[in-house]
Picture (cartoon, rainbow, N blue to C red):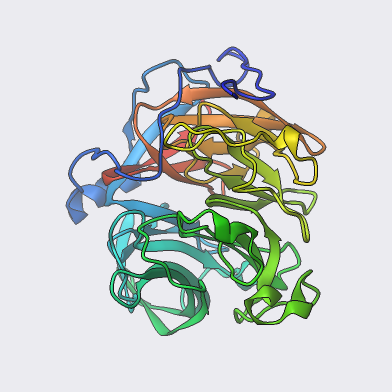
Amino acid sequence: MRKTIQTAVLLPAALAFASCGGAQSGDTAPTSTGTPATNARAAAMVAGGEPVQLPEAAPFAVTAHGTFDEPWAMAFAPGTNTLFITEKKGTMKFVDLASGRLGTVTGLPEVAYGGQGGLGDVAFLPGEASDTLSSRTIYLTWAQKGEGDARRAVMGRGTLVCESADACRIDGLQVIWRQQPEIASPGHFSHKIAFSPDGRYLFLTSGDRMQADPAQDLSNNLGKVLRLNLDGSPAEGNPFADRGGVSREIWSYGQRNILGLQFDSEGRLWGLEHGPRGGDELNLVERGVNYGWPVVSNGVNYNGSDIPDHSTRPEFRPAAIGWTPVIAPGDFIFYSGNLFPQWRGDALIPGLGTMALIRVSFNGTSATEAGRVSFGKRLRDIVQGPDGSVWIVEDGAGGRLLRLTPS
């Protein structure tokens, strides 16, 4: 049985992040953190920020810059200080962090809200960096209703048009990818987007939809990382293209519920994955590799029954670092800014269950937890600002937008 954090080293807060207690579970049942602010109050908070006192000492200062209703993902429009935030029920807002201006986005899809489903990720093409918002490509993912109780994750692409200071719309939004098959399940959609460093490909996570076994079946695209062209079609050179169908999309498989997908500074792709009871994983995601779920895991099933460890089946790729108890990650970034030079190249992970920010350091492809700081709230998503500050949004109703700067 596996009951310990693997390859974890915690440093004092004066040097890095402070350590904190055991993890709680999960991506579901977000805890309410308050009531969403009115537009006027939120605009004032965005511009100036309000100091936030954390439950324990931290090597950074935190200010709150407005609240949002069940925020799920964030992305800066490249070349701007404007941050777009999706809200799970099917709404999206944007904030100009320089002026404090808030705005709404229309032209959004109808989403299947409930459980872990709703509006998901938002992403922009890195090559379309500009100091103006309008007429740029925008990608969204969401849970879409199917027949009866069935749901599936989908990805759409459209054009962002911003003709006033406080309003944008998405024109021509079209679904360009679908999970296959649709499943009567409320969770494990994953649907996180990452663009390759050369801008040619789109990588997308597709969760196992709480079904487990499809992750080992190459005839579907569940429990996989996918490599697509920018129009959502399968990219040339994928490892299972000769099988035809959705197999042409698959880059890697044997994955459960990946809520973080990022390229590091060396161009390597990493996925951050929810395990069952234990066994959260950070994996180096490589072409054609099988990561073993549900045949192996360093966690156990929710009913307490055992799952063989990775060490028992060497044909499956083990995690670079795993966590038992779980950290229940919301997402992660590789930090590359100048405000925190001591973190450069490290992964920063907001925790849902842990309610903590976790830092992981690397030596090549080996990973070690370097510390964590408790926030006392479920943390959903994280982005790096243009100035090198770190922005985190809390989970649930009234989730605060938080800015981290050197103390």
